[in-house]
Image 1 (cartoon, rainbow, N blue to C red):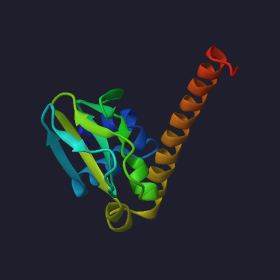
Image 2: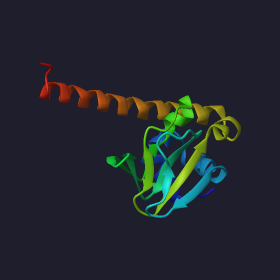
Image 3: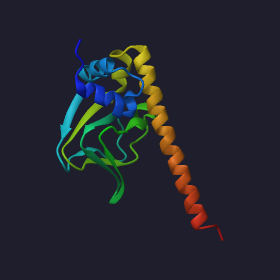
Length: 151
């Protein structure tokens, strides 16, 4: 079987696919839902609930809390994973900052379409990403406390 070079690139570049073979990445993409969002289109709104997370296959997504810009995410980044894990309302609004191709993963996808080995690897990758984000936020909070000590 000849591997699609795109799957090899995704296996290396997308944190969600870390430790998953390019062949399995190809199977995951083939079984999942891929959608293109045009620049300016809202992917989801803060406060809504959902059971899907997204992986940026190409393009850029901006996250907002009301008018406040929180972050820009690019090819290889994932977002919306907390909805998949804890079914809480979305903590930000996600908007396509340019034409963006997204891979959508739902709870059903994990339960029905993948082997347990691949599903567990992907879930561990999600947990790793969430942990990294939490550590980054903790560092930022510490910096803010040092800049503005309590009176």
